[in-house]
Length: 296
Ligand SMILES: *Cc1c(COP(=O)(O)O)cnc(C)c1O
Image (cartoon, rainbow, N blue to C red; front, side, top):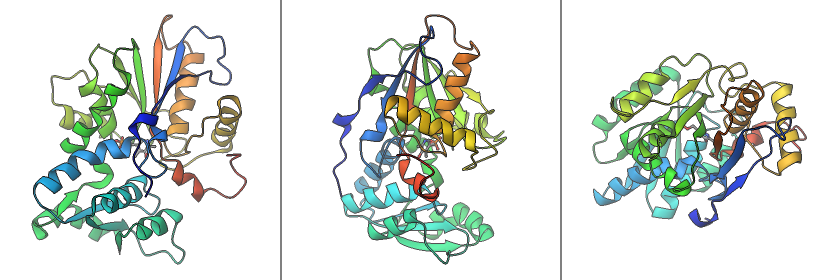
């Protein structure tokens, strides 16, 4: 496995297509450069779980996810590098053709168990009691340990006076960690990748506690729902790549970049805003798109 390289993270100024010359100053934090698979926020969300597992002498990790889950493949890769064995419970029937995500997770040594949705729900609840000797990482790394890991992300932009920190949200663990980790009253804006996830605010609060200023949640850029997209989103991804050389994924980061660009055009941000977009990785999921859909 390629090494995890935090030193490759950069902050680059960004000229989003269609908003060139706008009054808002935009930059991007390239967490996607850390590793091709354990990319972006996943390594941050996993590291505290793994540190705890290793300290407690646990030898096995169990986690949960779907067939294209960035979290599943990232967990598989990190467990391999730490010499931990791991099992991934995959939601749904075993597909006739495995996704590239599942094949890659298996190649890293993850044992995969396909379970129907109802069993999946039950297992998520009961697994730790049934397997006390293992370290169970919740789906998507959601939990206090995941939040704590993500709270070290602001260390990568310490001392730079941003006013807004913008990220994509699935479980909201990264947004919670950012809210806890920022030191200068930066506003956190989280763009939900899910449709009508009305639980998100409460989920984030359950991780941050009441005393932390909650992220501002944006629910209007889900493009039909989780992992849904339309030709407009794909065109935006290709245009953005042409203009900036930055690849995005259609599940999370493309929706984030699209949303912030749209909000800039709609004058959502006050003059003088200094906006940082978190590129949280996840590019492996693009291989579920047909060949030729994306130009990168
Ligand atoms: C998993 C993932 C997210 C979502 O992170 P949460 O902490 O679950 O909100 C965002 N971006 C990318 C690229 C991801 O892979």
